[in-house]
Image 1 (cartoon, rainbow, N blue to C red):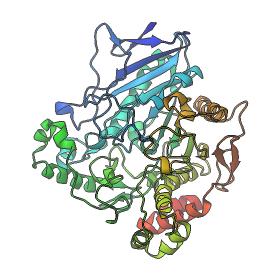
Image 2 (tube, rainbow, N blue to C red):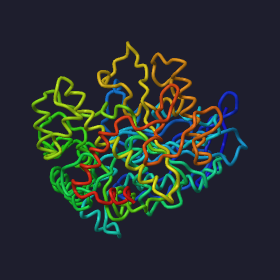
Image 3 (cartoon, rainbow, N blue to C red):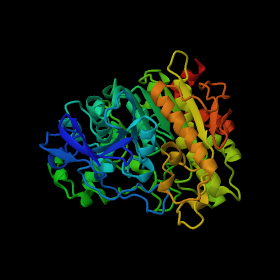
Image 4 (cartoon, helix red, strand yellow):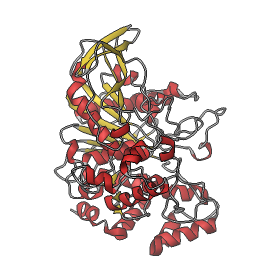
Length: 533
């Protein structure tokens, strides 16, 4: 059964569920196709269409080379195209109105992923009273390439961050159109994991996003160090000048054409070259050449502190208390290292730590030893550094006096991986990066794993927390363990597992070590000053 909704550009024909309780509208364009002369330009308004436009199938994702289908991080991509600026809406029955809106930004290191991933199916959240929107935006070099010529033509002296501009354009579309689907444009919650969580930190620090959302849920976001002028911290972001240098280097690698020719360059010719940099994801040269995870930051495909979309680094904005001040849930998984590189040889690992961390090396090796578990410890070090510390720090800075409330969690439950399925990260899964997604969306059917009653009950609770928060800015509600507001005393972390309970963060000593590292390295004084205040 179909249903029609009128939005600003015309009529959309979507699908109604069998019992009539929910509707879905897929593949809705929120901006023009960023192709030809619109490549590396801000998103442009969609032109109106005549008649009813079919909204029954997902639109294409951005061009990408993502993980294999056996990976826990496969993006669910079926179709790719530069014409990728589309979104999907799940909502209630016709005639419903005033529903809280949740807008989802997918994972994928800003390099891969899709709003069509079955993990993000919105049916169950819609049945809980939410209007859900999932968004595709430009990725990689199409979404984040900076170049001096691009900066010169922009009118504001900056380039890159087209993927963030896409997300802002999608939020502006939501503000103008979501009431037609029964959603409340004045009650919008952003949520996302990994790159999606990082996007949320960036949007909270962008003057272009003011007024577009009222709450945020940042899951395993990163990007909480100062902008870099070259290759270094994998949790960092590049400055505009460094990113322009990267873009110039890439242009030279593909023949040195002017911007007009770059815009006409065949897609594969633009995306295939790898910049001649062998520095590994920790800013060191100890990893084998085939390991390139993390290099996207320095390869023309990652958010930039550009002076326009992002005038300052999120760590400085949060540290000064100038982020868009809305209630926040933030948290991370128990094993954030699951999709990251690792080192297996203890001697190589010790050498790398000593070279990178100097006087802190002994303290780091005490908590992340070079021993028989080097493989696990090296990955745990990188995961804590990139994701866990950043998320914990964002929560602490939001918890400052006078700010809107913060609620902090750790997802520590280990999902029951199928014993028969080929899973690339099986040996290092546990409570893996992004493991909470089936529990948030109730999308257990997306993975053929031996889910238990305990998994489904945990999913009911987590999903209810998220929906309550979207409604009111407070995750608490009937039938749920009490989740207190986060405070710096540390005894307010919700441990999300069967029978959720509140306690201290599981790895306080490691987090305090990273506090010391980032206080000394590159002078992240804003964090220290804000937390001491």
